Length: 180
Image 1 (cartoon, rainbow, N blue to C red):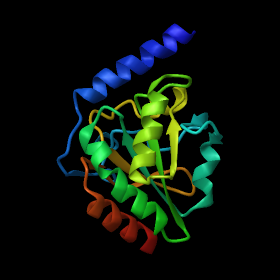
Image 2: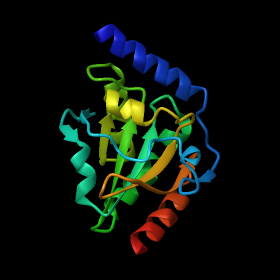
Image 3: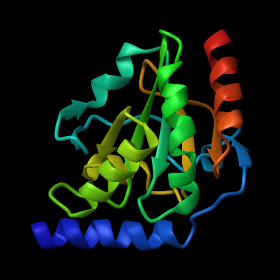
Image 4: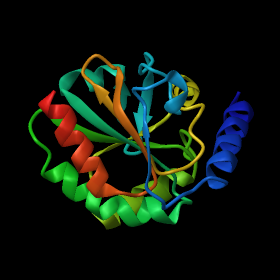
Protein backbone atom coordinates (compact mmCIF):
# COMPACT_ATOMS: atom_id res chain seq x y z
CA UNK A 1 0.00 0.00 0.00
CA UNK A 2 2.82 2.41 0.88
CA UNK A 3 4.46 1.68 -2.49
CA UNK A 4 1.20 2.53 -4.29
CA UNK A 5 0.84 5.81 -2.40
CA UNK A 6 4.48 6.70 -3.08
CA UNK A 7 4.03 5.89 -6.78
CA UNK A 8 0.91 8.06 -6.94
CA UNK A 9 2.68 10.98 -5.23
CA UNK A 10 5.70 10.55 -7.50
CA UNK A 11 3.48 10.54 -10.60
CA UNK A 12 1.66 13.66 -9.42
CA UNK A 13 4.94 15.42 -8.67
CA UNK A 14 6.29 14.55 -12.13
CA UNK A 15 3.17 15.95 -13.76
CA UNK A 16 3.26 19.11 -11.69
CA UNK A 17 7.01 19.63 -12.19
CA UNK A 18 6.46 19.70 -15.91
CA UNK A 19 4.00 22.54 -15.47
CA UNK A 20 5.50 24.74 -12.73
CA UNK A 21 4.64 28.25 -13.87
CA UNK A 22 5.25 31.81 -12.81
CA UNK A 23 2.94 33.27 -15.42
CA UNK A 24 -0.35 34.77 -14.40
CA UNK A 25 -2.83 33.12 -16.72
CA UNK A 26 -6.37 33.62 -15.56
CA UNK A 27 -9.09 31.17 -16.53
CA UNK A 28 -12.72 31.85 -15.77
CA UNK A 29 -13.93 28.66 -14.10
CA UNK A 30 -17.55 29.75 -14.20
CA UNK A 31 -17.90 29.44 -18.00
CA UNK A 32 -17.55 25.70 -18.53
CA UNK A 33 -16.58 22.63 -16.58
CA UNK A 34 -13.43 22.34 -18.70
CA UNK A 35 -12.26 25.84 -17.77
CA UNK A 36 -11.42 24.72 -14.24
CA UNK A 37 -8.67 22.15 -13.72
CA UNK A 38 -10.39 20.83 -10.60
CA UNK A 39 -13.73 19.19 -9.90
CA UNK A 40 -16.71 21.44 -9.19
CA UNK A 41 -16.96 20.52 -5.51
CA UNK A 42 -14.50 19.67 -2.75
CA UNK A 43 -14.90 15.95 -2.00
CA UNK A 44 -15.40 14.52 1.45
CA UNK A 45 -11.89 13.92 2.75
CA UNK A 46 -9.87 13.34 5.86
CA UNK A 47 -6.21 14.28 5.52
CA UNK A 48 -3.23 15.40 7.57
CA UNK A 49 -1.61 18.80 7.54
CA UNK A 50 2.15 19.16 7.24
CA UNK A 51 2.16 19.78 11.00
CA UNK A 52 0.34 16.50 11.69
CA UNK A 53 -3.22 17.64 12.47
CA UNK A 54 -6.17 15.87 10.90
CA UNK A 55 -8.50 18.02 8.79
CA UNK A 56 -11.65 17.18 6.87
CA UNK A 57 -13.69 18.82 4.13
CA UNK A 58 -15.55 20.64 6.91
CA UNK A 59 -12.66 23.12 7.13
CA UNK A 60 -14.27 24.89 4.17
CA UNK A 61 -17.62 25.33 5.93
CA UNK A 62 -16.22 27.77 8.50
CA UNK A 63 -15.61 30.70 6.12
CA UNK A 64 -17.53 32.33 3.27
CA UNK A 65 -14.54 32.01 0.91
CA UNK A 66 -11.35 29.96 1.11
CA UNK A 67 -8.35 30.66 -1.10
CA UNK A 68 -6.81 27.28 -1.98
CA UNK A 69 -3.22 27.54 -3.15
CA UNK A 70 -2.04 24.33 -4.82
CA UNK A 71 1.74 24.27 -4.65
CA UNK A 72 4.83 22.07 -4.62
CA UNK A 73 8.09 22.14 -2.71
CA UNK A 74 9.98 21.78 -6.03
CA UNK A 75 8.43 24.93 -7.56
CA UNK A 76 10.44 28.20 -7.30
CA UNK A 77 7.43 30.50 -8.02
CA UNK A 78 5.42 28.65 -5.35
CA UNK A 79 8.16 29.16 -2.79
CA UNK A 80 8.72 32.78 -3.82
CA UNK A 81 5.08 33.73 -3.21
CA UNK A 82 4.91 32.08 0.24
CA UNK A 83 5.88 35.22 2.23
CA UNK A 84 3.08 37.19 0.53
CA UNK A 85 0.62 34.36 1.13
CA UNK A 86 1.60 34.44 4.80
CA UNK A 87 0.86 38.17 4.85
CA UNK A 88 -2.52 37.57 3.22
CA UNK A 89 -3.32 34.91 5.81
CA UNK A 90 -2.51 37.29 8.67
CA UNK A 91 -4.64 40.11 7.24
CA UNK A 92 -7.53 37.95 6.04
CA UNK A 93 -11.06 39.25 6.67
CA UNK A 94 -13.01 37.34 9.32
CA UNK A 95 -15.11 35.51 6.71
CA UNK A 96 -12.16 34.23 4.63
CA UNK A 97 -9.16 31.93 4.97
CA UNK A 98 -6.27 30.52 2.96
CA UNK A 99 -5.32 26.86 2.76
CA UNK A 100 -2.50 25.19 0.86
CA UNK A 101 -2.52 21.79 -0.85
CA UNK A 102 1.07 20.56 -1.04
CA UNK A 103 0.97 18.23 -4.03
CA UNK A 104 4.39 16.57 -3.81
CA UNK A 105 4.17 15.54 -0.16
CA UNK A 106 2.73 12.31 1.18
CA UNK A 107 2.12 11.30 4.75
CA UNK A 108 5.40 10.28 6.44
CA UNK A 109 7.52 11.41 3.46
CA UNK A 110 10.76 13.35 3.88
CA UNK A 111 9.22 16.14 1.76
CA UNK A 112 7.13 17.11 4.79
CA UNK A 113 10.27 18.56 6.38
CA UNK A 114 10.94 20.59 3.24
CA UNK A 115 7.37 21.92 3.22
CA UNK A 116 7.66 22.80 6.92
CA UNK A 117 10.96 24.60 6.30
CA UNK A 118 9.54 26.58 3.35
CA UNK A 119 6.44 27.70 5.24
CA UNK A 120 8.37 28.50 8.43
CA UNK A 121 11.01 30.58 6.64
CA UNK A 122 8.27 32.42 4.73
CA UNK A 123 6.08 33.06 7.77
CA UNK A 124 3.29 31.24 5.95
CA UNK A 125 1.65 29.69 8.99
CA UNK A 126 -1.71 28.91 7.39
CA UNK A 127 -3.02 25.34 7.08
CA UNK A 128 -1.18 23.26 4.47
CA UNK A 129 -2.80 19.95 3.67
CA UNK A 130 -1.17 16.74 2.44
CA UNK A 131 -3.75 15.62 -0.15
CA UNK A 132 -5.30 12.22 0.40
CA UNK A 133 -6.61 10.10 -2.49
CA UNK A 134 -9.87 12.06 -2.64
CA UNK A 135 -8.07 15.40 -2.94
CA UNK A 136 -5.61 14.03 -5.50
CA UNK A 137 -8.57 12.96 -7.67
CA UNK A 138 -10.19 16.38 -7.11
CA UNK A 139 -7.03 18.06 -8.48
CA UNK A 140 -6.64 15.63 -11.37
CA UNK A 141 -6.71 18.33 -14.07
CA UNK A 142 -4.17 20.67 -12.46
CA UNK A 143 -1.18 20.80 -14.79
CA UNK A 144 0.85 23.67 -13.32
CA UNK A 145 1.65 25.02 -9.90
CA UNK A 146 0.95 27.31 -8.31
CA UNK A 147 -2.72 27.04 -9.17
CA UNK A 148 -5.12 28.95 -6.97
CA UNK A 149 -8.82 28.27 -6.69
CA UNK A 150 -11.57 29.67 -4.50
CA UNK A 151 -14.06 27.57 -2.54
CA UNK A 152 -17.24 28.77 -0.83
CA UNK A 153 -18.66 27.54 2.47
CA UNK A 154 -20.69 24.88 0.65
CA UNK A 155 -17.54 23.30 -0.73
CA UNK A 156 -18.17 24.59 -4.26
CA UNK A 157 -15.37 25.91 -6.47
CA UNK A 158 -16.30 29.49 -7.39
CA UNK A 159 -14.80 32.43 -9.25
CA UNK A 160 -11.70 32.29 -11.38
CA UNK A 161 -8.91 29.75 -11.40
CA UNK A 162 -5.55 31.53 -11.29
CA UNK A 163 -2.54 29.74 -12.72
CA UNK A 164 0.87 31.10 -11.82
CA UNK A 165 2.12 33.23 -8.96
CA UNK A 166 0.02 36.41 -8.82
CA UNK A 167 -0.84 37.38 -5.26
CA UNK A 168 -2.52 40.63 -6.33
CA UNK A 169 -4.91 38.65 -8.54
CA UNK A 170 -5.70 36.36 -5.58
CA UNK A 171 -6.60 39.40 -3.46
CA UNK A 172 -8.73 40.92 -6.23
CA UNK A 173 -10.66 37.69 -6.80
CA UNK A 174 -11.18 37.21 -3.05
CA UNK A 175 -12.51 40.75 -2.70
CA UNK A 176 -14.91 40.24 -5.61
CA UNK A 177 -16.19 36.91 -4.23
CA UNK A 178 -16.70 38.29 -0.72
CA UNK A 179 -18.93 41.04 -2.15
CA UNK A 180 -21.27 38.53 -3.82
